[in-house]
Amino acid sequence: MRALLLPLLIAGCAGAAPLPDGGARAPRLAAVAGYQGAFLPTGELAVRRTAMPFRMDEGAEAKRAANALCGGKVVSGDRDNFIDDVWVFPGGCA
Image (tube, rainbow, N blue to C red; front, side, top):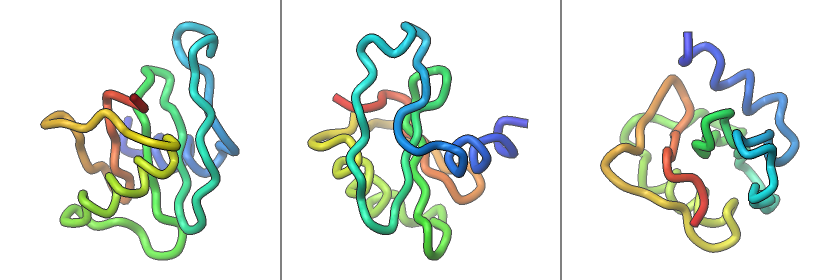
């Protein structure tokens, strides 16, 4: 079910979605040509490439895009994951 919702959440987002804290500390995502990003309700950052969908072996590119979307640095680690055509960074933006 989660895999089906990720593309819909990102496609419908034009910035940051609400976080569990009501968005009080939600960073604003920068506009980055060719990429979309959204915060999932759990605070995870989901990143999608708009032209050609990401593949599983493109984690480095997804991380570069996430860094740009965050305006500096994404919290990345061994829990980063790929679902459908979306890379998810559980730590969100630093």
